[in-house]
Length: 146
Image (cartoon, rainbow, N blue to C red; front, side):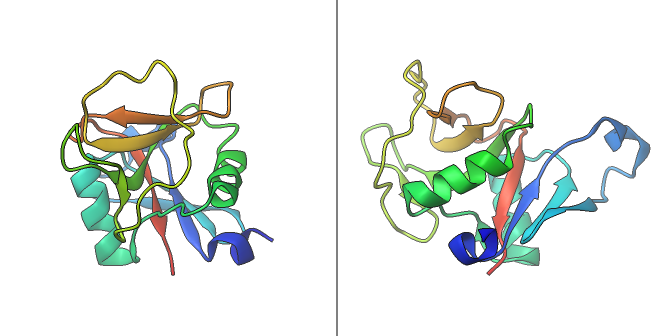
């Protein structure tokens, strides 16, 4: 069961009617057990602040099992999703927002960016969907609910 693997998490994504709602609002839609779809792309820092204010934090995927569970939940999506994964410099390792180090490698092989924040690229056809990105870019995001 998804909730038992992940606890509760929120999948934040963007739909075509985003322009029909107020820029300050976030609209929720149920996806599956433990998931709520919210529409509003944000920078990594804005997404983290939103998750901390309304839930726990950006999502932490401590294991590959959790990574693949989220991957399966976003298969139909054409979006990029911020994760709670970042690094302080290009020579430091990747860490989750809870302080854990990234313990598996699912990086896109063409990933040459010297960026400090990481996203999950749902639209890619392969399993390696982690991508380093500039933190100021606007993307959807996933919050940890518990």
